[in-house]
Length: 486
Image 1 (cartoon, rainbow, N blue to C red):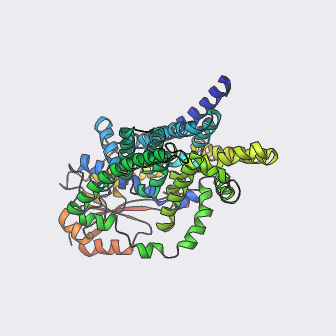
Image 2: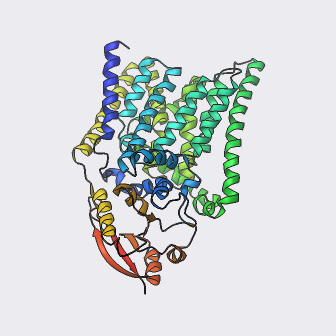
């Protein structure tokens, strides 16, 4: 790639990445398939909750509360360290997620550069920066941006491991453990992390080289198992009640109806990109049927293992919401470009048509991003600030102004911080009302009726504020109640 072209690509990538910080406090988009994403009202608060509690309640862990930070501590730790300098700030938390995405693009470029030309790697970086799904979710303080960053770092380091470098192999295991403690989906993509170590250190027919490759894989795997085993021991011995609530799964129930969920996955994969995902799937089918040499391509096989591993998680998890597909953007682009590269060389007419389709898809993605940035909405910010102001107006009357409710931590984060507690957790809600004695309760439109009934059975609810139009249809609203003794 020539210097002028390289500078043009760099300018485009930097521009698209920089746009992620524009209107960063604006609402998440509620059109197209994004309208079904409930995480925009809860998950930022869920996964920064430990950091929020540390600053607002004085302790990160709430006995009987909703404590995902115990099992996924990396993100709240990163956010908490940032809050020490910025104070509680949704701008800071979301900007940290954006920085994780910037590093992910750089790492995806670096991984591609290990096995492909600079031109190929530059296109990877451009397509990642122009991806609408990645753009929108990088602006939420959720787990996926950090998860993708650590996964790409582990794969990059794995590609650098060479014979005898056991320290770097151990470092791969450490990064994998950190990734799994960022989000517990890590084990599903373990083969994708280990494969580059084996592939880059074995030579067909040379037993000595193959044995050395397996030793390096074993070091990385043993390191990860040891660290995660220590974490598991802590969970079982100190947080058993929280574990049963947050990590508890019924495998038999989870596996029911998995074939139709798998079929739905192939349709929902187009959420990543309507052109690149079908191309990635076509490349996989072509490798099975005709292009078997692709399995000797380390980047192709690594991307395939990542894609299928995370697909297995999504199917097992009973249809993942759109945010789950963010972790699959990089391998989808790798697979699609590898297949496109082969078409361009071997079947130029088809290759030209595919490149044209990719160009149309890029323009479609950028149009979505532009439309969103030109029409920002701030309803969640306004509702959060309104609830905080309503509570602070009564702060002199009550020594405990704790707000309880589903997604309460989200409102604390967005408004700049005030004492909150989620209504879910290891302790039943009725008991939580007696133990923590909250003065305020918030409820969503369409909330679980039992939650409201439980609170109404213990306290008198007095409506103090209501905020409408948290989505364009106006169907989502949140109501603030003051809790008075019966």
